[in-house]
Image (cartoon, rainbow, N blue to C red; front, side, top):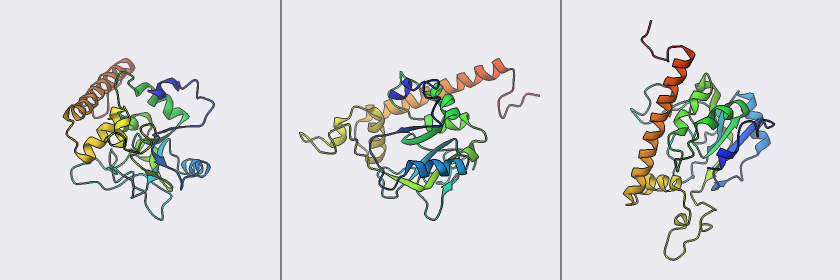
Length: 225
């Protein structure tokens, strides 16, 4: 994973780190204006709003809103949010076009699992790197992008040899997205995606437990007195 090379000490001279996929349309995006809004609204972790015409648009949180600079919460499908301040209704952006502050990246960098092929589940864990997460994570509506779902690192958006263009790209992360949104029959890909998500969740739970024990503090929602 390329981000593994961006050690926090190496990128420390930069105020913000852009970790973006390669299949994004940026005709309506200005980085300098974006950073102005991020600073204005106190966002430590953010992403541009997604044009409603984007392919594979999964979450209401990431969808661009009209007549808005930034939004930090949303309404999702019934049962999807156990708490209005938790993902995917708040404290949530996708691992697609994420922008991290220097301090947030120092935390997120340690979450990256280089032995896993993709990053499913990481976007739900980002909230652990800022506090309060529902105020410091948000979507910038005034600067938006288009998710094309046509990876430029594959066959440049062209079908070759009877294969769809995305098949020229080896990332299982993208295959996971296509599996979920287009119902391809490659069950082994979907199973791998979900298995790795479970592995990531288990590792996070172990790491959190070790942290709280080392700090001699009770974890959130603990019943200890």
